[in-house]
Image (cartoon, rainbow, N blue to C red; front, side, top):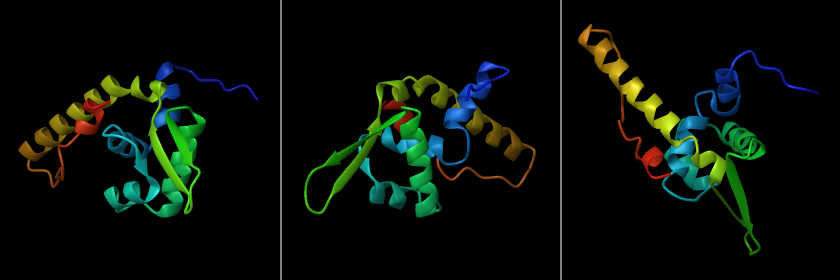
Length: 124
């Protein structure tokens, strides 16, 4: 079935939209990781959701899954060349979000940013 989009941003959000995918990509920007390592770095994500998000990112060719033939089996995920093209977009989104939090804090709104570490995007 043919996919139809009204504007380009829909395509982008279809691929990297949601709460978890940008976080996964940030962590993978620092280098290949196994599923368990990702799970430890993103403690609020469930195993089911992590698996689903990794499959979707792999299907969209944003990440690559490498299986090592050993016992026990070892699987690593890393950014594909296509995934690396998202670098500037994700850095820009991070900076925008940080500025927004600052502005809302200045207006005495109850909001906090637990980490400003978006270095994973910078390391693509």
